[in-house]
Image (cartoon, rainbow, N blue to C red; front, side, top):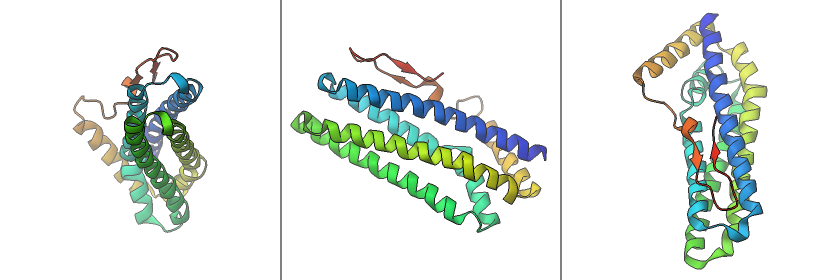
Length: 191
């Protein structure tokens, strides 16, 4: 029971970090839309880099690395939900590839694709937000019901081992999230 509680608290804490980071990214994309006429490509590229950083964080979360594989091994009951969550993540990665292509085109040709870039960045944020919400509303309750105490013990042991391996280093770069301020946009930090 305690190992399940520990594990759920750990993934909930990561979920909270993900939500805060994503909210800041979404606000940043809204700010880009508002100042799109005056935006410079270096600033836009930096914002894109933060989206890539967030995507990497999501792929390294304990939920993704340990809990979901344990759930897949334990039961087939969650397969449909997990497939939908995977599809949301894959759609987000496709959008990030599209943004990278549009950024390359924008640097070469001028401002012609800025609207497509902002739209794709916004769509990426929406998809990842949907995934986070579905994890909390559907996956978390399912985890408590479908994983045994022994499976939770194994997950908690992996969490503890992973945390010990970090050896004082930060596992995720997110708490230091900083975007450069543009003339019309304030600097954002994840607190």
